[in-house]
Length: 336
Image (cartoon, rainbow, N blue to C red; front, side):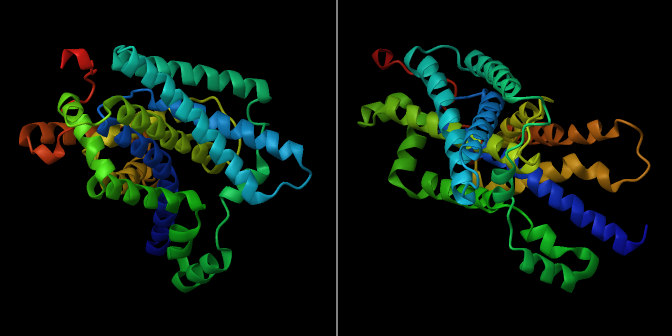
């Protein structure tokens, strides 16, 4: 393999990594928002499953209702269905853990099982796996500025810079903007700082006049909706509007949870962390002559890196890298 061929293969791998990383970026950003309010939601994989099947079902129904459906409306329907269904799953989790004060770990894991099951059930009812496809919606979500990509690829020969940076659907760039917006919200706005106060010490926030349950409910529901968009992106762009039952979404959901820890609960770190996880997961593509199944070893690397970060953070004990002090602790006002 020549040097230019290797560079071209590297560019292709990085492009795959960006798409892969975007799925877990949405999942992680939603979980960051949830955990900043003090709730530990381990139901992210199930929520992403629900977001995926809801957006696919909504898109299929909308496309079937019109002979030539509008591309923008197709995208809006898919996004709205994915976000709304995931937010409802978050509402269920919030009711159980905030109002009924059930164990957050158990409730989250149960939600993962529930989301996976209901996703596969609805997916099976839509038709045979691999045959159901929201063609128009997927094409609209994957649309990019073709002349710009072709021009940049022509300038850079086998480097394919245009394809690497700009041959992606709008949700890739929206995910980056969302991370920046979430960082600004949590660090620069009064509402965001109040949410963080609730996550650090709910009793103190309550004594200061903040509506603790309101903040917890909203952060959990909106966070779940954002995580669900990761499922929408997966089904519409990553697998081209098809439905499959290989539990890949669930695996990516757990990667999203790992990314939250890796990024030490910081939205901006989630951006490069997500793409790093993507690169690590696709690294085997660059190494010729690997034995069968070696890709599974590389897919373990993100978890290994997360473990290293977790150990490092625990040893250094820097306050800014620690999770919210009240994370996972239920709040009961009468016990204040």
